[in-house]
Image 1 (tube, protein in one colour):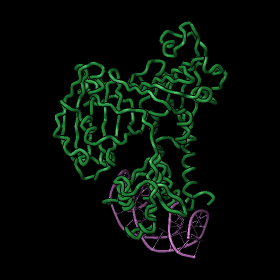
Image 2 (tube, rainbow over the protein chains, first blue to last red; image 1 turned 30 degrees about the horizontal axis):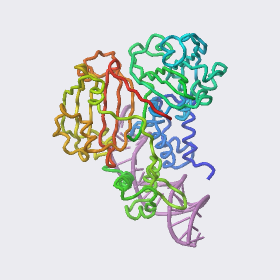
Image 3 (cartoon, rainbow over the protein chains, first blue to last red; image 1 turned 135 degrees about the vertical axis):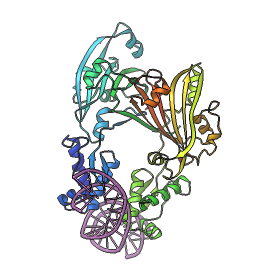
Image 4 (tube, protein in one colour; image 1 turned 90 degrees about the vertical axis):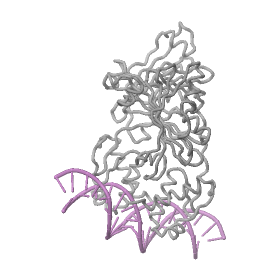
Length: 233
Length: 233
DNA sequence: CAGTGGTCTAGACCACTGA
DNA sequence: CAGTGGTCTAGACCACTGA
C-alpha cells in the first residue's frame, strides 16, 4: 500500500491547518464534499476526520459540521520539551521572535539562582514563541556562560536557546515552579493580551555538568497554554 | 444510540486487561472470533481494536494477531501530596470547610472522565482548605463509588477526601492538567478573592485498582499557591 | 425539510506471518 | 496454505441542527 487514502486526507487537512489557511473555528468541508472530491467512500473520509478529532485538530458537532479546533495546547509537566518540537508535533507552525540576545552584568538574584559570582556577566535571551502566528510563550532566559560559551553565536530563528542548550550541555536535573499571575506591561505587549488575562508562569532552573546551566521564566497566556503530565506515584 | 457496539467491545477488552485476566503479551481473540462472538461486522471490531491500539492498550501485528500491550513504565517525577500534610509540614495550621458531600447523578462529562455509566450516581465533595485561616484551595472532587463506597461516612474535618482515597484505594496512576484561569463567582466567594485574581487550576484524574478512582478540580488563588517539582529527565 | 456527523453492514482485496 | 490485521466500498439508518 503506497499511502492509505484516509492518511492522504488527514495529511491534506493538517496541512491546511498548519499553513494557517484554515483558522481555528473555521467550518471545514463536510464528509460528503470530501467524499466527492477525493472519490472515496464516506467511511474513509469519516475515519480521517474522526482520527483528527481524537488527536485534537478538529472538533465535530453532529448536525452542524466539522470545525478546526481552538488552540488548546498541552505541554508536559514532567519532561522538558523544546517548544519548537512541541508545536510542530501538533502539526502547527512555530516561529520565534528574538527580542534580546545579550551579555549583561548579573543581578544579585540571578547570581544566586545560577550560582555564579555576583560580579560576573551572564547571557540573557528574550524571545517570543508563536504558534500559527499566535504568541504562546514569552521566554526570558539567563544562561551561565561557562556551560554554553557560544550561545550568542546561534541564530535563534533557526534553533531555540533551549534546543541549543540540550545539545551542548545535556540536562542532568531540573527544578520548576509553576504559578498563575497577571502579566506585567512588558509581557502584555509581547504576548498581545489584556491586563486581566491570567498567565501560567513556569520558572525553571536546569543543571548540566554539575552546575546550574540556566534559569528561565516562561510566561504563557492562560487561554493558550496548559501543562499536562501523566505519571505513576 | 444506547451504546455503540464498538464501544461495548472496547469496554469488554479493557475490562479483561484491567482485571488482570489478560496479561501483557497475551494474544487476544482475533477480529474474526470477536466478529462471530458479538455478531457484528468486522469493521466494527476493527474500529474497537484499532482505537485501543492507538490508546496504548493493545499492540497489533499484521499476520500475527493482537496482543495486550506491555506496561510502559512512567518515571515518578511528580508526587501527589495530601494538602493537609503539605501545610502542616510547613509548620502552618490546616483546616477544611466542607461545602458539600453528596451522592448525585453524574453528568455526561464526568461520566466520561470517571469511565462510569452515564446513568449512574457518583460521590461529590466540595471543600475549602485553609492555611492559617487563609483559603488556599477549593477542592471539587468526583469519586467513583465502586472504589470508595464508604467515602461519605468520613468526617472530612478530620481526614481529607484525598487522604482517605490514598488509604482505601492505593494510587496506581495519575494524570494532571495545570492551567491559569480567572475564577468563577463560586470560587471567588469561597476563596475570598477578586474577579481579576488569576487562579492556578489543577485537574487531576487518579487511577486505582484498574479503574478511575476520582477526578478533582483544584482551584488555588495565584497569590497563595504554586506548584513545584524537581526531577531528572 | 435538507444537510450534518455517528454508526453499522456484508462484502472485497491486500500484505504479511508461520506452518 | 489458512489465518492474521489493514484498508476500502456502497450502501443503510439514525440523531441532531437550523432554516
